[in-house]
Length: 351
Image (cartoon, rainbow, N blue to C red):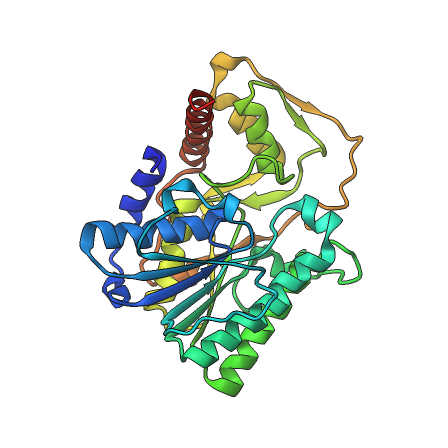
C-alpha cells in the first residue's frame, strides 16, 4: 500500500466511530475500483489485517484491470465483475451495501450520457433490490453535490433541504439528474420496503486514486503539475468549488454508514472554498522551484463540464455528529501530487 494511502487509512480509523458494527459482516461496494470505492476497501481490509474484524468484502467492478493490485488474491475479498446496470446475483448474506458506481468523468458524460444516467438510476434500482432481498442492515448511496445545481440569486450555500436550478434538457444533466433520480429511488424503497437508506453528498473530492485523465479541472491541473507544465485554464476560472480531500470524505461516509440517525448528509470542507483560478494559482505556488505559470486558453468545448458556477455546500449537519475535515486544501493537494509522482516512479521501475 502506498505510504500516503496508509497514513490516510490510519487517520480515518482514529475517528470515534462504531467500527465494531462491521465485525463478522459482509459489505458489498459497487464502483470498488474507483477512488471512493477503493478507499472504502482499504479501510475494511485494514480492519481485517490489524484488528481481525473478519469482514467479507464483495467488490463489484465493471473492469477487473482497474482494481488496484493491492486487493488482488485477498482471501477476504470476493470480486463480482459486471456492470451495475445488470441484475446482481449473490447467494449469501449481505449486511451493508454501498453504491458508489457512477461515471464521474466529464469525458464520459459528454460521450456516453446514457451510460452515465443508467449507472445511477438502474444501478441504484438493482442494488436496492439486492438490499431488499438480503434484508441489508444499511444501504448507502454515494450521491453528489451536483444534485443542488446552480443557486438562485438569494442562495449563498446549500444545506440538505435546499436546492437550486438544473436545466434537465442539457445532455450534461445526465449526471446531476441521474443522481437526483437515484435519491428518489432510494427514498421510494425506504417508504415502500422499509430499507434503511442513507445518502451521502460529497463535494468535489480529490486525492490518491483519482485519474488525472478524466477531464475534470482539478485532474487537468494536477496533470500539468506532475508533468512540470504550465497550468492551462480553459475558462476565466470564476466558478467556485468546495474541494474535500478523500480522507475526510471517507471519514464522513463512515459516520453516515455507522452512526447517523437521519438520511441525507453533505460532506464538504467549507474552509477549502476556492475559485478555479485560485486553485490553479495555489497549485503553482506549492512548487515555486518549478517556475510554472497559469495561462488562459478560452478556445475549448465545455459541453461536458459542470454547468454551475456558484453554490457551496454546508456540512453543519455532519459536523454536529463529530465529523470535521482534517486536511487543508494545500496539504491535500500536496499529498495527492506526492502520491501521483511516487506511483509514476514505481511504474517506471517496473518497466
